[in-house]
Image (cartoon, rainbow, N blue to C red; front, side, top):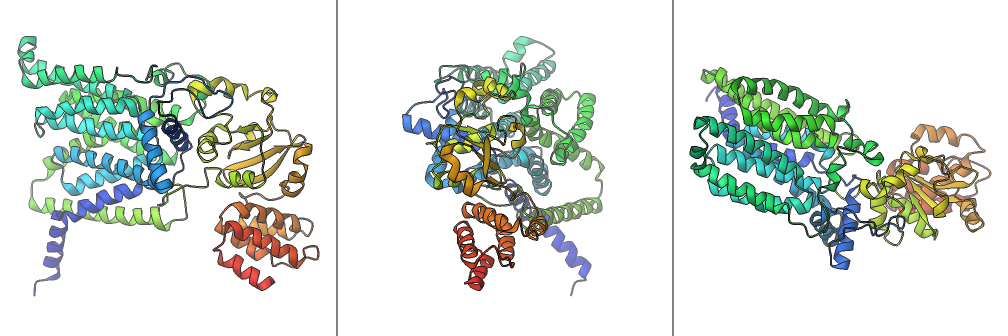
Length: 586
């Protein structure tokens, strides 16, 4: 019988060579990117895609609001919007999550392919992909820029594959096709920057190889392919069925308007935990750039420097930078590791270390995605109700609230998609609603619109000057939304029943229990929690309500308690604690 050490070495050798380990790493990389739909912009794109499907044309003017209806804008993402709507129409929210997962899998797959072009071991390559997923997770949301990330990974894979002679020259002819699709899905500005920087650096390197003789350079087969492909790419990005400048939105970044200046993704990348992996990657990249300067590696310098600047200047550019930085840095780190491995024993130690890292990464991913308290990136599909006014719209429909709507900009997309009969007031589109948003800083900005009700977002306090409490009443409150109606004769009955006086979904369970001890507050608190749960599934608050509704109070009779429980069960029909409370009080 062989000794345990020999068995352990055999298992390690099998695992380090087995295809299952990198497959596990790649699977984990994709799993990290899958979480319920939370981005505010997703549903505006879906709603715009629906408008195009219904009208049978490319929509490049505002059609979802009543405040800017007909205003022209550059719809540089029309094809992506149509794909999003197709997925939603066919499979609902799950279809959108699945589409996002497929795109993220393709991004990771092409990045893995680039790493393997550098002959990086499968285990190490999969670990680098996992790092890419964690670095990018907050910005891998279902928006048209997801296609830009995919095409960056594809283009870099092709360019490096041809340069390293791992792919044939004719592979370059895919680039015009990619850029044409890119142009219609998001606007290929990142692609032009990448291709321009890469081509310029490659041209200098080739000129140096032929002693700066231009005629000799022209005779090279690779350069002839490059020249033809670049010309076709430039032609591809000039095709424009929308009749307006595709890159208009990007030009505003150099001369930002008010909406751009207050939008987080257009601001410098902050020092927050969410961006910690990016800053670590940037630090590693800075060291690699020094090595690239020493080696005169013009291609690495040409692509990393401009994208590093963009990533520091605009937080939304962190993922494009990381997509390029991870393969380049991995190539240098791999070369450094190989240069220091001069024995079989050291190689075995490196393999074992990689397996340990993979095991720890797998355990952390399982905890982060499945076992930790629920957070925005927890594994799941469909809609994240913490960010969208799903319950608020149900409340408005049930109580037949109509008239002119005011909505916070971040909520405009979902309202336009989920309630198309309610024309929105504003959406975070910098070229359409900038002046309107800027006007909202001043009291009286809403007078011209004769607003009847408002759906405010999670930071509703910024609009307090527009909705003084003596003129407006809060009638429904959920995590993402505060609904207010004008104090008018038409709304008197609604306000009498639903005006929020004590409840807040942001309070902890203990805070609600402390409130319930006050006999003056208790009946109203139970009524407001029941009204909240009637339209919103919330297990935590439903459990607290089921406990508190059984407290003794002379002013809350059994019929009222039963009515409140029945309301709560409408939105939480499978909550065991609510069902038990109803049985106990029946």
